[in-house]
Length: 136
Image (cartoon, rainbow, N blue to C red; front, top):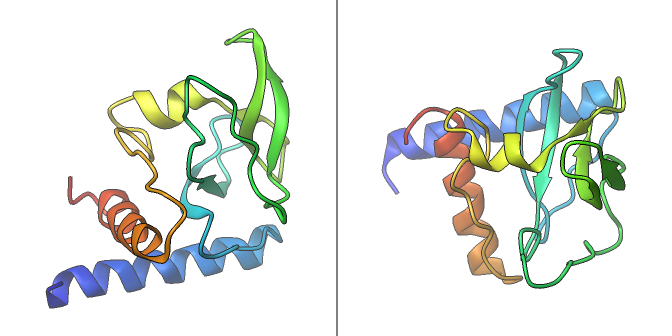
């Protein structure tokens, strides 16, 4: 990893910590991968979490406990189903999976979480930090 990548990762982690402190949402490590975005409804900066298997289309993967308080099993009117999703800690709006993962300018566009190992966690954190800072 070069010096510029290390700087981007450090800045990403500092922003995550700042948003965590402001929102009261804890950062949980080594299973949950975190990034951030603005809530589509209230425009507050919020943490977004992803985890191994969260986008598994063949079976629903229940995220491990303890879960971030903003990862909730909610009904999506748009999708017409219940699923584990990110929600805004300020206005409680569901942050839809399509927006988070499928829109080209979305915070998790094209991201697929690795497995539940320390190596995958480290690689995923690096990817999310660089992606969030516009390196892709």
